[in-house]
Amino acid sequence: MTADEHTRHQRGQQARDRAEQARHRIAELAARRAQLAAQITRRSGSTPQQVRAAQDSLARAQQAAALAADLVATAHIAAAEAHEHAAALHERLAEAGAGDTGEQLRRAAAHRHAAHEDQLAATTPPCPVPITHG
Image 1 (cartoon, rainbow, N blue to C red):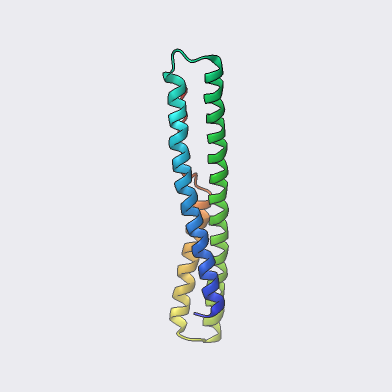
Image 2 (cartoon, helix red, strand yellow):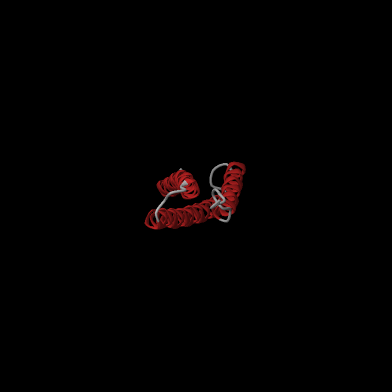
């Protein structure tokens, strides 16, 4: 693996790591959102000010979850682009007869598959959690 390929591989791994961290954060925010929604419905003696504060917290949690979902999608798109680039490189190496042609084509196919998976992940909602207000 050349230094350039290694750098691209590292960037792809970093993008996957960031996506995983964002998915984890989305799950945390979804749990917090569910907690806040449950608090709103459980409180029978809440003051209007407490209800507004809980609703504001819920809205902030929803906004943070949406931002995290956007970051995950962006990371997947970047990873897909890196895989497409790596696949094209392996195909060019195979065409040039550099190294084992079969291995170059296998690597290109693996990168194309990974790119497809990342593109699919970029368009799939990370964790749909319904919000109920009772």
